[in-house]
Image (tube, rainbow over all chains, first blue to last red; front, side):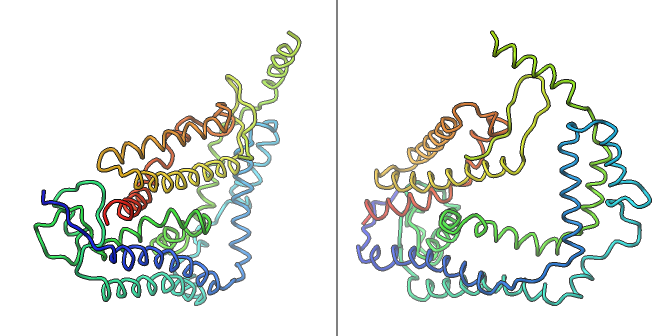
Length: 246
Length: 112
């Protein structure tokens, strides 16, 4: 490859470090702004009820083996019988989530706010980087890459003779954008890191359908193989005691 | 690592607490991210390039796994459902952070 380029120290002092620092600070700022803008909406009673119901059914399912078979059957009947079981959703009563979403303008508003708080800073930073720092090599990644990465890493430099491992400032911005996610999850807590993916889920699925989760939980409950654990525990106690004595 | 799943013996019903395990998994991810960032800075300062750096990353991850294993007192099954949690979980999620900090430190120290 071509011999090493000599980069000006001023690039380090005035481009590389400031860019990274600004990216971190903007990430922190975005976190607090989105925290401030988040409106505490009062959750719908019905949705909360259904969520709690699913959790209760799940608890029953996970600890089914610790109660006698009769008790388990009684509980299962309580949850999933066809007449008035809690998990049983009559047909036709299922609400369309899309319609529900349009009936509640708050939800759409909230989502728009979230999206804006993500898009605006990104656009601004990108414009800032583009305006001030375009047209020169800002960094060098310490491993070789194939020519295919040229478009990705040397965005803004139209030279084909420069080694691909040299990175333009615009691409350094993108590297920061993705690489700092880990740092944010450390300094801001888990919820920040998952925010993006959650947002994607919301946009894709448009809210979850509570009736569907109820139905799924009912099916799960129906196929549980019940086996009471208590008889085995006597054997286990015996083993433990024997170990203690010997 | 506050959580544990209860005792585990041979041929027995598995008893574990899903919330506690979720917490443990989160701790693993935290440590991995932290170690990948620290490892990136170290690799950059030491001036590793190309393959050496990536080997260093996996070395750091192996050390993290060993550390997590030591933290559980090598009785992994009372904290996690399998060894894979400790060895494989989040192995590649820290790679991007690692590359970023590696590049950053390497550029600052060696390029200019």
